[in-house]
Image (cartoon, rainbow, N blue to C red; front, side, top):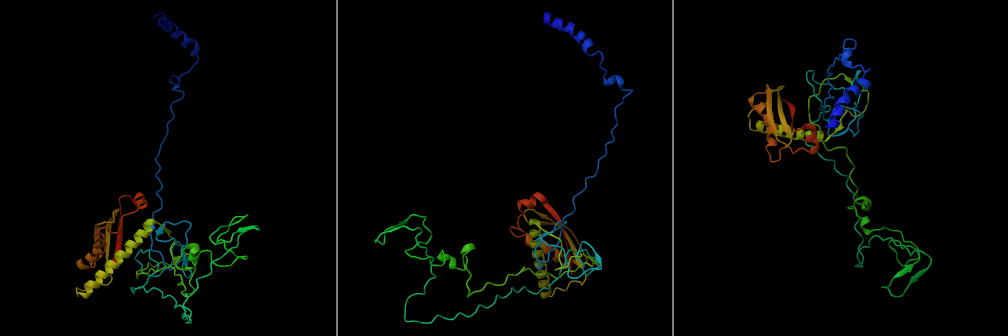
Length: 341
């Protein structure tokens, strides 16, 4: 109790001695008022939009430096002829009131793969009286390394030498050139074990087996200054490959349905009509139709809708998304397709 009483008596004297000349901010509020801060929220600059574009299968793969476009392959922007005005898109001739990312058009003819060259005729081996089988390619043989050779008369014995034993060693004085492994002489091997068969030449490699679909092209006077096979600037992504396959499936389903209705004499679609279908693509490969607008009539509007909805009714739909697609797109994404009759 005495200690506590002593501290109560000592505390005011410590304050007077050490804090006598200290000026508190509260005493100088009139001379030094609080600063006023004007805090304004700055709008965050959104990232550039990612736009899917159809790539040119006849253009070689070449990764661009920077682009907002993505597709199923890396491509550099180019065009076959110079344009009147420069721009960041290829110069094309087409419709005025259409915004189309397609840059090439093709036909509905079935794709015929290139025919490999006919191999040269192989002369049959001359018949001989000998019944022995054709000799296999000579196997490489290396003499025992070193100068001192210790080898007995027993054929089942061991030969030793003072140096490290090489591969394919044999009782020879000079090396025999040949293959190191008989399997290397096969044209079905892989890597270093592959040896082409001169009697069966390999087919000439091709860029792509994809077929360009006929499509409307947007009318653009300006174009890139880079000359070459007409192409977009595009980056290859997993979603680009997925969406490219989805477009191929929908396109095939749509044309097969049109052909079937015409063969059943249900009529013809109105030339120049179009249907716009907005749908949600989910991570499990299923779709949900959100909106349909068109002037092709009930039958042909439904044909466009069914081209999207029918493949998704299969057990796996258009295919489950990869983990990378789920991270970027979330649970689903909205897509709009325009069908032109």
